[in-house]
Image 1 (cartoon, rainbow, N blue to C red):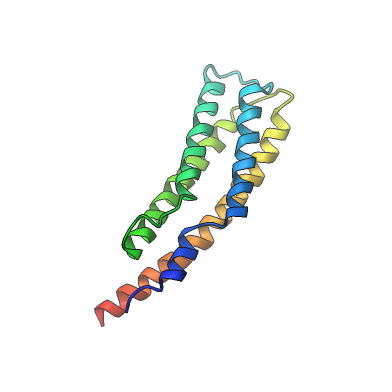
Image 2: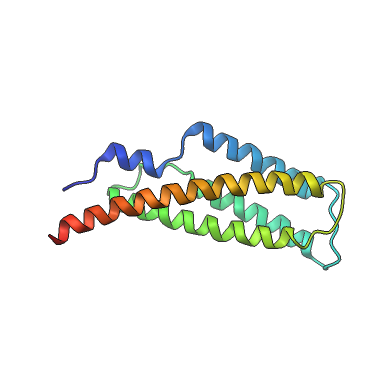
Amino acid sequence: MAFDEAEVTFLVQPGATQVQEWREHWLTLMDLALWGELKSSKIGALGKLRRRLLECGEKLRSYSADRSWIPHPRERIKNCLSSGLQLRESLEKVSELLDQMESGAALVPLRSLWDNLAENLLADLQKREERLVALLNTQYGEEIE
């Protein structure tokens, strides 16, 4: 049985409103990390945080990208799952670096925004991954029988 194209498209592509919300949160985070007052006793921690936030934005962009150019539905699903895994790893790295920040006027708003974004993304990742894996398992199950 072939994949339902509409279902695959729906599952691999977050909605435009959701993507815009993530983008706005990320832009605010980058602004706070770059221009806000943050302090850490660990040398280089702030620079690493900024780089990891930028990398996280790149992973978020990849996760929310249009996959219609990928011809086979199974490959679109795998691409989405791979992008999700990379985003999840990037979220963990940023969280670790945020824990190294100790003070500064931007620390509380940065942590608050980060917690909100990370929680929202992880919820989306988990829900999307579960549905995509179930779809793949159904497809593979039908091919085996």
